Amino acid sequence: MSSSEESIRLAAGDAELTINPANGCRIGSLRIGGTELLRQGARYGCFPMVPWCGRIEHGQFRNGGVVQQMPLNSPPHAIHGTGRDTAWRTARAGADEAAFTYDLVDPWPYSGRVTQTFELTEDSLSLALGVETYDTSFPAQAGWHPWFLRTLNGSEARIDFAPAWQEERGADHLPTGRRVPPRPGPWDDCFGMPDGVAVTLTWPGELELKVTSRAEWVVVYDEQAEAVCVEPQSGPPNGLNTLPRLVTPVEPLEITANWTWRRL
Image (cartoon, rainbow, N blue to C red; front, side, top):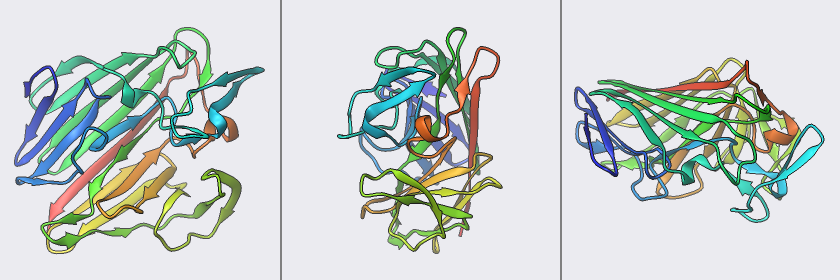
């Protein structure tokens, strides 16, 4: 492990992972044998989506009878949580694993703590997010938004997965509430995988990477030429309203995901 004010580097075999706690505790780089897998730039890499994932309709959600308003950072909606815009604290950092925390503050209206951990091996990365409260219960979500490069050394990524359904997307980019048979891409869509997320990215002749999670929801976004996003998350977009999952003093929200790869 090496670190600076801006980044912490983990290494295992020929895998190198760089985490930027000051920039939303996002993964800034994942290199396998010297080949970068993630789109570079301050907004890219792989960022945590917490305490919600995707869009909240008009930035509003209810907690019991109380309506809360989040900033409309993707008008007319609020998108992807506040964790990516927050400086996180390094709780520990070793040669191949690290943990980070941040305390929920404004504009999120409830107190709590978020923990993110990373464990790197020569052929895998294990990710975990936890949201806990010692005070008021509140609905929350968590997940990851990686920007995998579409092209590695001239080879273009192929996406393989077998979702049980697709959330029909309305003109407002929110799920309509209808589940439809999976449709061909390009996608900016949420899919249900009740047996757990399992998506394979293959760059023929280069690399195969599998994204798996016990979570049942994944958003796939491949509308940009530069990158492909495979986003395991604990609930669907707008889920704070449509499928709320409460974080309570006795029941935190926890989600894990794994990336595993092999050379082709």
